[in-house]
Image (cartoon, rainbow, N blue to C red; front, side, top):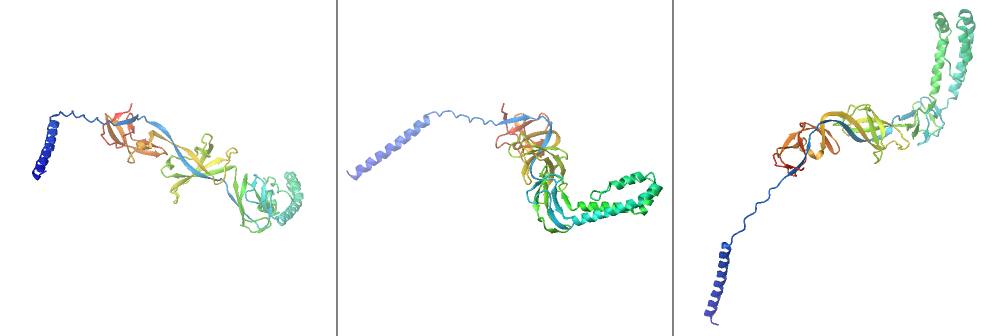
Length: 376
């Protein structure tokens, strides 16, 4: 094929393609386009709650550590050899109220006291003849008193003295001074015996029996086990709701249906600088079914003060730390409220009007004056 024929063939192909494209564009322009559909209007829905104020009783929940209500350090008041009492002086040892915990050897002191009482008996015997002659009305009482004195028992109270002359006579015979001196020695003898003031257990032992102790020596430490205190840290914002004397619920473990009962007995009027909290102390008695132990952490629910004309709402309702949405004639409105108390999942607020339609659920990007409809 010659070059001329090839060129003619190429031109024919180009004309055919160009014509087809033009024809297609012409026909497409003649075709009627379907009418455009309007985009459906977006409707924003909200849930609302009619504001109805009521008097709300607040609650303060916190966790606190159990401690003995009466921990006592056993300090020696006298010197001598330490002797075991009614129970072994060992850590963890339980004891009952009134049992002898430990004592200091008191043999010498006891003998000296008995000798002093014997001298007092001689002194009383020496004045009985004078009393019989000069104070006949008082003589029977003093004779009975003389018979009741025993060297191994506490000294009984003196007979009643009503006559001033009789009192002067007894004073000159050193009866009164000797009586009170012996009473002082009896009181000192009690310092040799450490009697349990309550039911409890020994938590610390510093000195073993058989060791010589000096006045002031720390023998050990005991804890009360039939009554405890719970030290509860309360945030500064909640301390205003806590009142002395309030009955509280003490919850051990996960079972909240059978709480123990406690009572607020005292609270600090200063803030702990390390935790920035107040300390509230709750007394609670030990329970055999739900035994308490020193050092245990428990949940405490304290009924607080009554707040008048308030409403409790979910936390998500309040935004920007003090604003809520209300529904007003198909639009969202914004209102400022006062948050009276923060709970775990709710806020206690005031500042709305009775009957306002409070929005409890709003669109994600809600804003003031947004058009909305209420979910029926």
